[in-house]
Amino acid sequence: MQEEIFPLVDEQGNIIGKATRSECHSGSKLLHPVIHLHVFNEEGKLYLQKRSATKDIQPDKWDSSVGGHIDLNETPQQAALREASEEIGLQNLSIHYIDKYIIETNVERELTYCFYTKTNQIPKVDMKEVSDGRFWDISEIKAQLGKDIFTPNFELDFGHFLSEGFEHLNNYKTITK
Image (cartoon, rainbow, N blue to C red; front, side, top):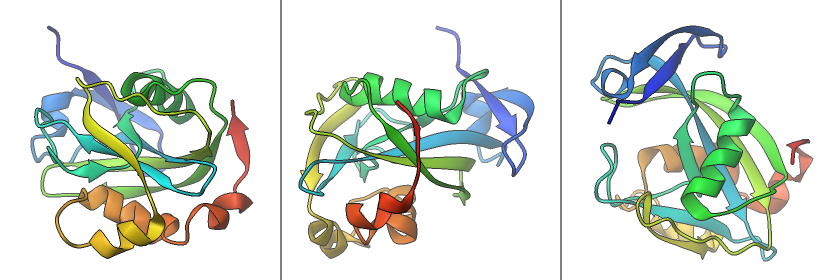
């Protein structure tokens, strides 16, 4: 199987090159774009996925509802919708842009485009991508922060714009369906 090729970007998101997945995850700090999509239900609970044990980064940790790399020639919005379908089986979502920022760890550097949606669809976990998933109360997430059960990336997103829950996000504009 051929290794995935990721676009490399500058801090504004302009494509400046490309590299393999292993190059991007090797500690090279090559900046590559990713998406995080946060899925809320009608009750304001936030869906989280548990990463598969086979993931090369942060296995077995609870993470954003949907996360993934942006492919070459794909917009962040297209990537968010594709990943939602692949990882948790959600289709025809209206997604809302929140923000983008750089997340840097000891292994990688990502330009992270963050989105949210509210839906009454029930996520269906793809067991190749995700090992578990469920809706969490915001208070339940707050009680578990810093206990090494969430990915550091999710905790950053949560601290930046999710800790106030869904109602706080209502000021963001709809960008795609």
